[in-house]
Length: 338
Image (cartoon, rainbow, N blue to C red; front, top):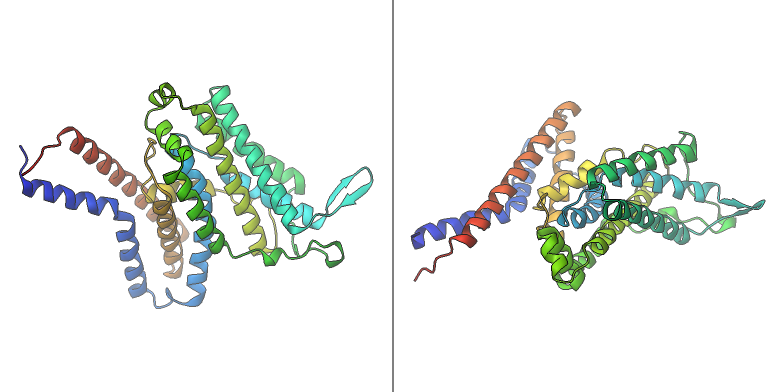
């Protein structure tokens, strides 16, 4: 039988594990501020904010997918495709029957986000109806989207996407700052995940799909919805990235799916499914971005940056496993201490 002292020690360790991302973030900020006097400069903080907005929004959709026990490798390519389609519509419009239609910026954003939802629906349908593993299904979609992004532009860049005042499609720079969109989206998705029936279904499907199905939940429908959300988030990131650069390139978002997964894992989302939260994901995105930018400011070689980032992600995943084991052990050996 465990003593009260042992329980206090375990509770303390669990508290540290639950807050590990925030603790590591504070340590990193202090470390980088000591090692580099430029870390708190305006340009560096703006760079961190830019990365946080892009990776954070992408990671929110990824978190929903991972909680259900899936994975979405297509989001990076969707970012590139969304940027190319948005850039194409702004620069060239849409020619139908000899007439060219130019869309306003809000309409372009809506079209691109709906496209992202459609791609997510395809991912979800292939996974749930054709029973293709999420890794394979989204890997295939990743290549398809990247191919279409190159076909649209024949490999070239759409630059100077300011639009034309006479056509009413100017204002790409007027899109709200990505960080503001991240805050708004984080609050909405966090409430949905924690306070709504759909959010409970997401956790239930990831925790035990068979039990969820027996309780009346429709796992296939839940999975399709979360992949649609992931696609919409990726499309939004593509638009934000294009607006920030005022240009679109078919290679945009290349490898960003790994950044989104890393941010989710750093935020405490379990790759086994059934556990994760939006607040943790946002903190994970901040940690990942601070690490990435901090290494750049310190002048660390790019190759070493990959190594450091990989080690941090693996360590974070290991701590998540330790936390899960402790929670499971605690639930099995629960003893009332008086």
